[in-house]
Amino acid sequence: MRLAIASGKGGTGKTTVAVNLAACIPEPVMLLDCDVEEPNCHVFLSPEIDRTERCTLPYPVVDDSRCTRCGACSALCQYNAIVSLKTRTMVFPELCHGCGGCAEICPERAITEARREIGTISAGSGRGLSFGQGLLDVGQTMSPPLIRGVQRRAADEGTTILDCPPGTSCPVITAVRGSDYVVLVAESSPFGLNDLKLAVETMRLMGIPCGCVINRANPLERRVADYCRQERIPVLAEIPEDRKAAEAYARGLLLAEALPDFRERFENLYRRILEEISRREAAAGDQPAYGGETA
Amino acid sequence: MKICVSSRGDSLDSMVDPRFGRAAQFIIYDTETGSFEAVSNAQGINASQGAGIQAAETVSNLGATALITGHCGPQASRTLQAAGIAVYSGADGLTVGQALDKFKDGQLEAAGSSDVSGHWK
Image (cartoon, rainbow over the protein chains, first blue to last red):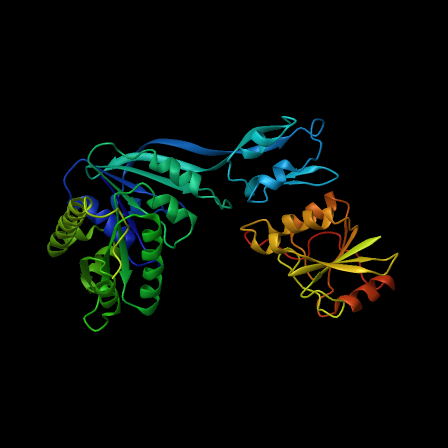
């Protein structure tokens, strides 16, 4: 089973949920940190890393003596990474997503591929968990290929938990794709609600079922809970605003280990996720698969 | 010769669009006939990335050999240079007609390289 922990807004507690959930569910568990621009699961797990590899991406190299400036490559590339001018054909490697389309479409076979490094994938284990993460090189902007590299480490057996980047753009789409269920971590501020709505719309478009965890829950701020009820999005857990939790987090501790009542919360969260998945599977015979339910 | 001016609108009275890559339109002015045409830069505006490169290709395909604009980033600048197009930046705040008059009077200075940095460097 593959569970993605995502959010619209940043800083809502994805990593807190991901690492604590991973620590509280039956083995074997693999935790993959897919937030490759700022991976931080390792802070809480202190894993021993035993394998690292560099992640590379292909980019085109044009043989000027064969290129006729026909413009086929330029017209194909949606990322403006290759441009065919009357004078010469230019390549911008840092814009290239590595699809290989230009080399394929070139009628003169003037394009070959070179590779550039974009980041590092590392793997290891800690606290009984298998662990993997990606780290994008400083100055690089193209994280999806690196995220896919991290995902290839996902285990076939047991549970794989993916800590995703925030937002709703390409890195998030890449990180949640292929998941059985997405847990959206939200806070009840106006920004938190706004960005949760964007994330829910994204999951619905992708057809991935999702539920919500309300973090730093406050009995006086119910806008996220109200929205979830209206949209029939299950609230899987509420994590209360708690100074002890903040202190444990700031020391790099797992809440599930430092605070016994938090362990119970994450065990309950896992049970709720399983219930939601089986409820959906039972209903799947009656209706087509759809990410979340409309009111 | 053909001169391209990045423009907010489709006439010589339109303001120069200070942005090159994501300019609304390009006015292509023919110095020999005094005629002009307005060309949409929809491809540049809608580009997910590399708008300046896309716009430079558009300008090159339109046959212009000089560009008047507000500002030009590093990738657009490299592409325009490779296409043999001379760049005159700093026409911010002028109408297209005023910018062309200044150009004809030799009052616009050619930019050696980009005058603004890329947005993710």
